[in-house]
Length: 224
Length: 310
Image (cartoon, rainbow over all chains, first blue to last red; front, side):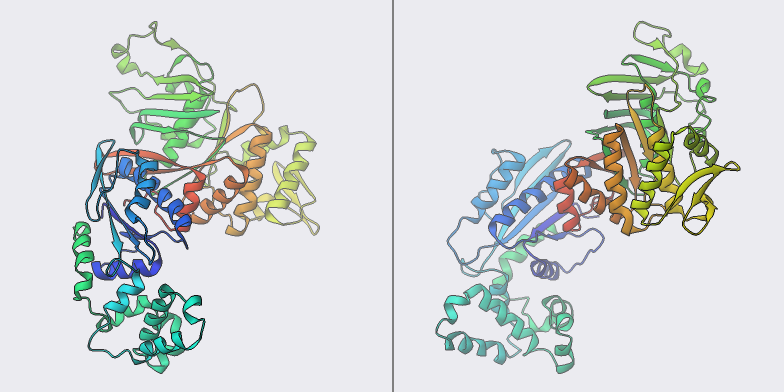
């Protein structure tokens, strides 16, 4: 049994991190999603998760916790954001200073290590930004790339649809229109999902892309 | 109200603690994690009615407690260490300690520290499970002792919880009889849900008297009860528990039971879920309290909270 936990923002983040780790442990998942739509919800949910992990560390010998969240497209101190919740649950003396660096917290007879990673490409973005960056060079993305024109053609397009939403649309199109056949598209919820592509169409993604090096290096902490 | 319990050398517990009990308590955990043992520990711990140290010779209590089938599970084999059950009720410490003929020499008995006493288990608590810990005979006796108003209330509650029409519940030929608009049938003609919930209700309304800490112990509360009535069952148990001042301890394996318990606990602003499990590293059975808010989030995110290892 793993004594490690990784929390991520949503279920697609979970599928992606599990694909990078090469695992899918359903009974006792290593990667757990927070489930939320904004920082206000995430802060409440991260605090609850950390409270649960604190109890698990005290009683079930949980050893390591990783928190993986998005940088997004705004200038914000993501580590400072996480430190607020860590201080609430464990005390103000525990402060994360940099990504990938751990803090160690003594709980009962156990020591819990907490660290974080911020998903980004060149200091911005989130999972969809990463997915766009790791599209396989051997696969075309004609339909997905056409979305750029669609995005620009409406006068107000870029004010209504921001970069985050655009990138999400891009990878949905890339999976559904560039890399699925007609039968698959008829059951798009299943066969054109990110989860399905990560499990069954791995060749549409370039998992060796250097954009993933830091994240893969971070995830080594959680491989037993 | 029982708040904390510390059990030593009793059945699967070497040194076990559970803290923060509330009026209604639901206990989850894997098989053999000690859930039923905890109910038994609570049963014995609660039997100590005076806030002073009491030594109980369990042998002598056997007749008094013979109605309770699980009593036979208490080990009479030679023990090196005495069973100690310490409880905190309404802020006061109560302690029960067993002695056996063979270890009298180890305990300076009687002493200043320990005061000898007997414990009367009768009507301090009821344990119910699918194995009929309260026998049908006992249930009939308890039901017959109730006044008409209480019998009618049980009839009404059964109808509300199970959404069936019952005109009257009576005793005939030493059997509980259920009268519906169509016929009158002995209770055993009905399903487990009706029989079980009837027993819970009779136990509730029978738990009268001068005892300070009335408790209802229910092992595997989900047995025979369809998930669609879980919410109404809890709603009524919470209400009765408050009205009749009876503390409830129930165990479960059912996720649906926990979900509906949590829903009612959030609405009522009371009630706690406890998770029991064996910590492999420490080789010790532990019990964690999950506050309603946290449990709600654990349910939402499919976190493990039923005794699974992480």
